[in-house]
Image (cartoon, rainbow, N blue to C red; front, side, top):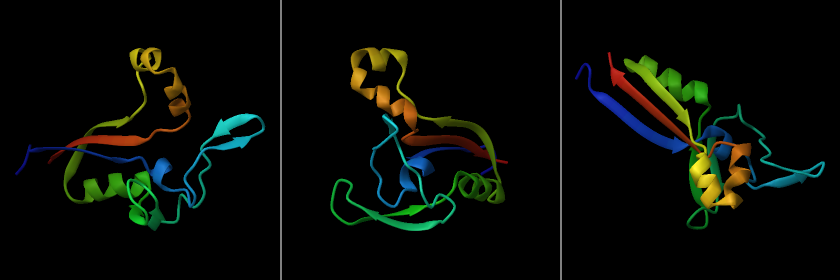
Length: 109
């Protein structure tokens, strides 16, 4: 239906892309290493259960699929903790190194 809103969230492609998703220490800094970002397809990881298969797509593939399906992108948000959340949970400071979630709002043209 034209004008119908469609809002959804997925794991951010940077979060899902690594072959071994985990923090690493590089040069004394904690980083989220990303490998194989442009190689789309299944990724098997232990997340809530062992052997979970996720299907990685790049940000461009996701947005272009929506556009090709007749959606107009209205807003894209890469989740990050707010200042209030950081004050309440200082250990979340590390989450400023990578977005964990991607939120997209669009509507059918």
